[in-house]
Length: 137
Length: 137
Length: 137
Length: 137
Image 1: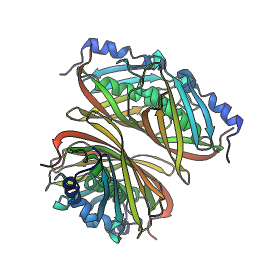
Image 2: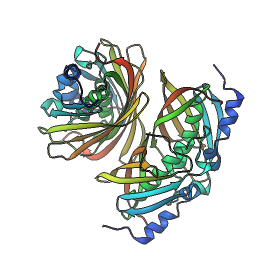
Image 3: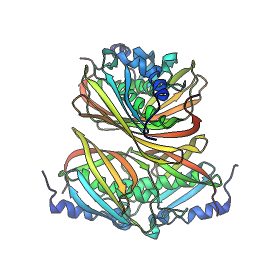
Image 4: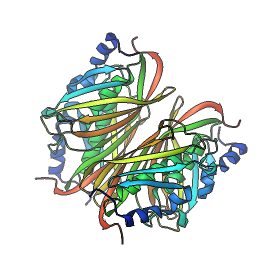
């Protein structure tokens, strides 16, 4: 399977949590996704820095999309995030995720978050459990 | 130091990202905090489940508060989250964090997220870098 | 099931890698284990400190035993280790592991490594995939 | 600094724990290293599989060498390992590590473990704390 059907993309685009944060899934292929977040005032923390949880949410949106792109539902078991550099308030961030390994129902995914200049902001790694349940039901 | 001064608590309560999500820091002691999130429709993902990034954000809010409770600024280096059970939409979640170990500027913190019945929803672990910069400036 | 049968314990005690390092599983209950390592010269690194991989190996031995204690084979998907304090060369270290959560074939385990005074040396967390294959075959 | 001095390489090659396991650091550049392990009977676990802690030890040897390659001592704060595929008993494994990001005293390193055919066996990520103490003393 080389493409993700439009219905799946439409359902993923309705994600309420991503929408409240302004996170958008830009591209989606089986096991691969790219998401974007235009940073707003609301994405700052109490120190005036871009909030780590906003960066995590961006990466997680890509992860959720990619792991649910195979026609069946997947859920996250674990995600780790490592912060490489601070992001600039007002910048736009991009997350890219790829499936690294799939063994049975388990998939391991790597995520990278970069700023608009391609600077590495964070790395993440996550495990998804791929169920047998069809994605669209 | 056994208590956190009111000015620090007030600044932490202004966290824009936590506020947009409705996350509240309920209690704060040096190296320890408890946060809460009443789940809303906006906290769901495209599968209709409570979003992992909402759960992460709740834990991270407690972590950020606790690591910034010593009078100097701290930033997160890394956080891992492991999902133990699905949360119920409409429930209220609580996160508790405690400092496990401090060596020089490095602090390691454990977080637990539970639902309103005390059921374990997620575990997190994070490292903070404690700077010398005063928290209130 | 409240106990682990003797045959399982005997097979686990034959672990070649644990034996070469002198790691012993002291106690084993379903989903729970305790292992020990008397530190030797060979457990040091090139800085003269107790090697992180020796500490990891001790925790992993307990994890492997506990996750294989239910009558079926289990394999590790991921393990993270966080070092809390340096261990003293010549001391004895103990690792304890417990199953925190089991959902289907996935189990999440927490490990703690302490020295002979009960001081926390390291924390670990791991995921095991529990297969259907009988442990003894 | 583009090369690592010979004295540093010699001290790293004396690592007792790596030597007992037969792990060798093949190449070392500042922030980068490659290590190898010819798998032996002793590297198996009680299931007859290559032991996860042997794979971890190989990656950690590269990480320790790379993080101690800058002329000052470094210690590991945390390491996570994710297992991608089983290794074949009798094969040779190789680990490569690179520094991804350095901020002040903190360095984040990525490790990959591959078999002799270049198949990905495990991924690791670790944080090192870079002290000011000279490596050779």
